[in-house]
Image (tube, rainbow, N blue to C red):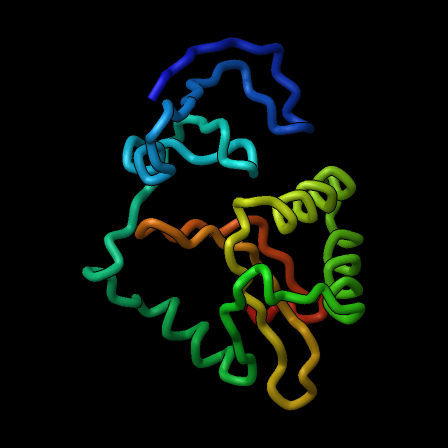
Length: 168
């Protein structure tokens, strides 16, 4: 992996910070190599990565804590499904939900809406996790996911603002 250090004039409205450590995969390197070194994709085509300060969760050792169990009980009326991106359909009901979600955002709503749709259409989104209300089948949440090579990375989540208190 090639690593490049750079400085920028910050533009916090567009999530551009004063310094970055970039990573570029070399020929034959897998995306897993970037993730295992602490890099996440900055380009949804998985061509450019940035070094992050993050927490990695070793899923086989993970046990849900009290808050997670509380949310699971509170969300029993919500179903979820993991869908391969190629099989996912952005229905009018889902599009309406995403539009209502971004309409409630006070900062960078248009930018975030565009980034969400870019992510959803890019190689990053190998899968989509969708949530709906069991009784009405109304869509209540959606998140693009990258699931490959033992990596699970969630993207920009959206949810129905009506259900903000539910904490999906």
